Length: 229
Image (cartoon, rainbow, N blue to C red; front, side, top):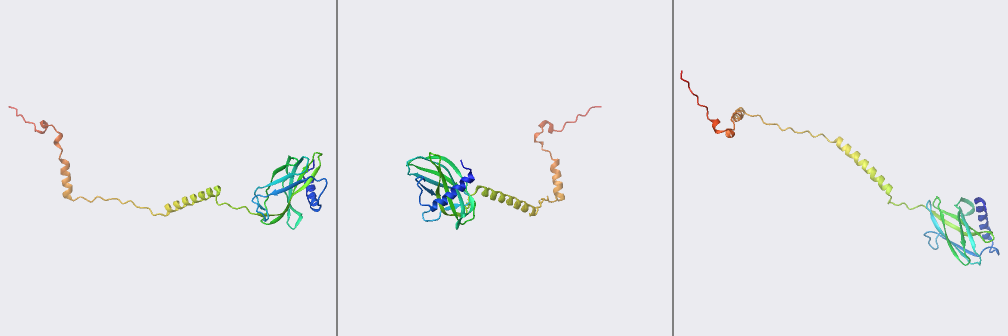
């Protein structure tokens, strides 16, 4: 089994070789296509920077023998010079059997942060026949466009942060309002002074006892008995 770096170099070199050669007798009869997410016919495929862009790679085996899809690798290069590689993409290993006269669809994800511009993309697949022979085949070799991810206004973390900041500012505002507000003085209601006549009448009323609760025999003054000498 090849090492990852040597396999990547071999597959990329094989892609350049296959691009210059019309056909090979020993090459497997496999038609391969790559479907990009949200692709529009006639337009350059778009890749969102930083997101996982899931491609669908379709293998159609028109031969009479089974094959095995070993892995898919890729490179991102300058659009005007594919030899000027910007970054090697992640290699995905599958080991999935591609039946004779059968079709196989495999996922391949591209996740890479890059400025919004056009670059060149090369994807290669490594096929293995029953005799353990490796065949690098071209999956995609063309221009793609990177774009920035769309920022969503509905972000729970941002909403929570805004609510928290608003609550802090509201609390500070209430504290400042209470500190700056003038203190209200409590008015003491003064009782008007009594005149001498009113004071004397009040004292007379205090001297008068409510005699309703006193028994009748206690209300009569006792009779004084004079003793004879």
